[in-house]
Structure formats: C-alpha cells, structure tokens
Image (cartoon, rainbow, N blue to C red):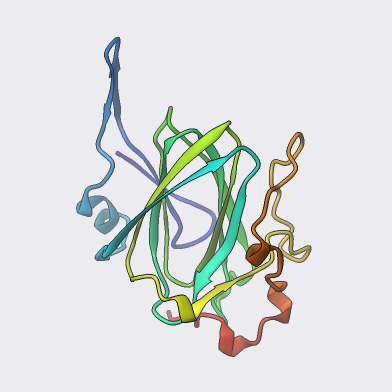
Length: 187
C-alpha cells in the first residue's frame, strides 16, 4: 500500500497493490491499519454503493450533525472525485482536491469529516463504493453548489454535460452558507 498525503491536509490517497494475471485481479480494499498509518483513527459504521451513468455529477454533499468521514473507491468504471474543505475556521477553507478513481488502479481516497464531497462519472457507467464513519442523517444533509465560481473546481467536462439531481442543482454557493450551517474546524 502506498499512502500519499494530498495538498489538502487530512485528505489521503491510498494506492493498493494489485495482483493481476490472465484470470483477473485481486486487490485488498480495506485494512484498518492503513488509515492509522495515515494518522486517522476511525471506525466505519456504514457502507454505501451507487451506480451512475456517464456525465452524472453527485455533490457536493456534507452532513452538518455527525459529519461523515468517507473512504471512497470505484469498483467499476472511472470518476473524478472531489473533496472540499468547508470547515468554518480552517486555514484551508474553500480549497479542494480532485483525483481520478477507477477500476484499473483501484486507488482510494479518505475524506475526513467536515469536508464536502462529490464526483463526476467519466466512464459509461460507474459503481462507486464508500465506507462512512457516521450514519446518514437526513435532517442534517447539506450541500454546496458543484459549480461554485469561488471554489473554481476544475471538473473535466470537456465532452460532458453534467447531469445533476434537482436537489444538487439548488445547493448554495459556499459564501452564502451561514457559519452555523458548516462543520467547525478543530485543531
């Protein structure tokens, strides 16, 4: 396992060793010690799996109460995955980091609690799988506009028209979210 700290403190990229031959491949997709080695001592309580078509853009989502840390990966297909630091008081507030996740390299990203998360499907279809450190809580479900000009996320949309849910299409820009509706930065 290759553990890579990204330019966004707390967001960690994991590159597992893939054992491939003419029969297919084998890859270890989770080991608690990987996160501990990266400085995150977390407990996962929920796993999620979504399937989306090319051009589907999900996000940017976060949970206000009981923020979720997420270990994300792509089981099938290819996506552009984004984490945004939206923790009120963070020295990295409003910064984002994006990475390609696919079923060839099997890289995974850990996104700590307090970050907004989203992804864009680049393949015909993608199965997106992630572990969460807190249960989903519908009343505290929140979002930030995926196309917020202040964030200036460089989504790879050259040949895509993003397909966004009605809910995601109406999320506010980060600058319009009251600090009491954002996670709080804790050193």
